Image (cartoon, rainbow, N blue to C red):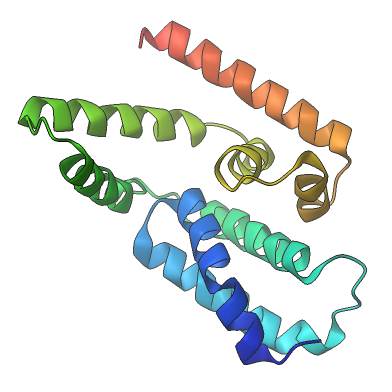
Length: 170
C-alpha cells in the first residue's frame, strides 16, 4: 500500500468534496476530513485490498459523515453552501441582478433542505451517484450493499423528493 502522504495527496479533494456535500458546511467538512485521514493513517496498514483504495476511502468518508450528522442536529448546515452559491452566481451571471441571485440562493437552499430530509442511506446514495458521479457498482461497494439496493435507495429518494416538492408547492 502507498505511504500515507501519497494517499492523502491523492484523495484529500475527494474526501473534502464528499464530506461537504453531506454536511454543507466548510468547517464541518474539514473536521470530517481530518477524522477520515486520522482513521486511514491508523488503519492503512491493515487495508486488505478486498476493494480498491478509493472505494475504501469513500466508505470511511460516508460512514464518518453519517455518524457526524447523527451526532449533531445542525440547523445551519447550509451556511457554506450559500456562500459558494452566491459567489458562483456572481461570477457566472453576466446579468447581475440582486433578485436573481436571491432566487438562485433560495432554490439551492430548498433543494438541499429536501435532500436533508432523506434517510442517511438514501442521501448517501443520491450524493455518491448524482453529485460525485460514481457508478451504481462503485456506490454499492462504498455503502456495502448490492447494486439493486442502491437502485432501490435512489428510486425511493427520487420519489420522496418529488412528493415533497409537489406537496410543498414549489
